[in-house]
Image 1 (cartoon, rainbow, N blue to C red):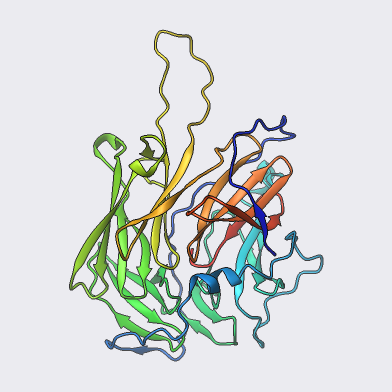
Image 2 (tube, rainbow, N blue to C red):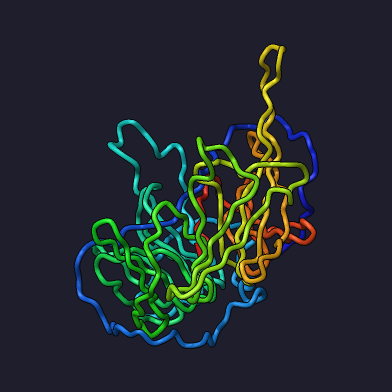
Length: 387
């Protein structure tokens, strides 16, 4: 279901009925632990096979075409079946109702995770706390990564294949073409990297060096890795651009591109200088960051509440190094605002709050047009393909 919605316009919202809790931006990275058997694994140094199902922009957005007008948890939840295919997945979600957090509960509650397929079917895939990251989807929605029996498994949702990830490996990044998965293995103070080729389950050791204090942003077609620094400057001073390093997966060559804040309407800084909000992926592969102007404290006047500066998203095409566009976000304010969730093809996926509720929205960087993909339950926390 897709309806057309206009881009944000300056409005004065009605007095909110209640203040929503804004979701924190999560850093990617999970520890794979535990020991168990490995099924049908082969270690090889041969290149990955060419992609037979490259995720085109149109195909990526087709994943969302079967969503209902309003996404609601099933009345009688069914567990994801292991004996039959269910088809590609559109998203995962969890409802984090603040009422479930109590001082007497003895810790964070374990709440159900729902998997939604491209045809709108829903299945439960386990109980986790809000702080856990134990489920993920490939960019094309075909592969479902899940932690079970203290180790990671990769399930083919278009079939029944379920492969165990070797003990000790961390899941680092999906390939942008959906054909492989970057794994990391930490030994002491160093880390080695391996590409897990889908669907045949081959392991291909890579020549990438260890990358301390860097954010992994995108695994370009299983051949290049894009990263950026966490700390953007001395004494955490914001910078006017972010440099993204792009290294060949076998360590033979490297290049770089930058995201400048000059793409914003007026000069800005990358939001949160220590760990800026950065996401990579899509097709063509790109990286996007949230930019905002710094708040200016009034001088010689009594302190007064300050409104939040406007937020803008700016992007760079990782293949060409050219700007990928920009999106002006609705600035968070009580019951309204927008949060950057991920990428689907050439469009930006946002979670939008209004006084009427929450929505999953696709935004076109070329013109700022929004398309509502579905309305969401209150307090829904989404995991989208490729994240």
